[in-house]
Figure 1 (cartoon, rainbow, N blue to C red):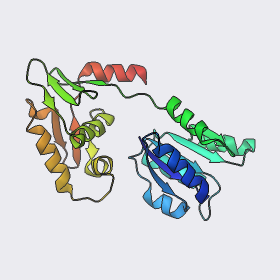
Figure 2 (figure 1 turned 30 degrees about the vertical axis):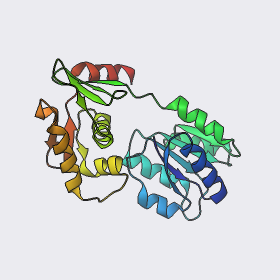
Figure 3 (figure 1 turned 60 degrees about the vertical axis):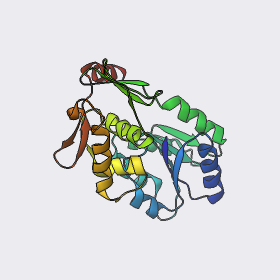
Figure 4 (figure 1 turned 45 degrees about the vertical axis):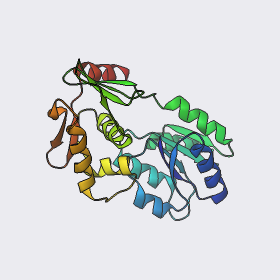
Length: 227
């Protein structure tokens, strides 16, 4: 799970990072509002944001996150528990308000409670199945396809977009954990996995701006019902 953290108290920042890393989260942390604004993007699963930051109010960061990712999962952290502040946070788009001081175990509990477990088995077009626990692709009676970590990461980010186009930049951020990498890496990875596929159009270039994966209708219908 990728987490974006903004907390100007260096000690608390370090405690949160250490605790979340301990449960196998990958945390990008910032203690400066301006730096946080410059680094916001849609590739995170959760955003933890303090309100009272030097130079930039946490609400501005919250608004920028919502602009980048409308369905972002955002926790606000603040010692300002005035009801107007809390209401403003929810009205601006946060999913939860964590009152300071807090035990980091509270954040961990809220994270586990708020994030829907990823499906282990994803139905693809052409009677295909992506099985995460087995790190494989299966298409009917055809030979099982073994996947590398980067190939799985590519499938995961494409599935997150559920049949819509994932940009090259979004793929770079998710697979390589950085922006502005050589786009040749994305093309090479897509080409590599497509050589393994019995049906090349499972993954396709979309409008030259990114890639999309073709999911089975039953998976899309199932997701819509659960959302």
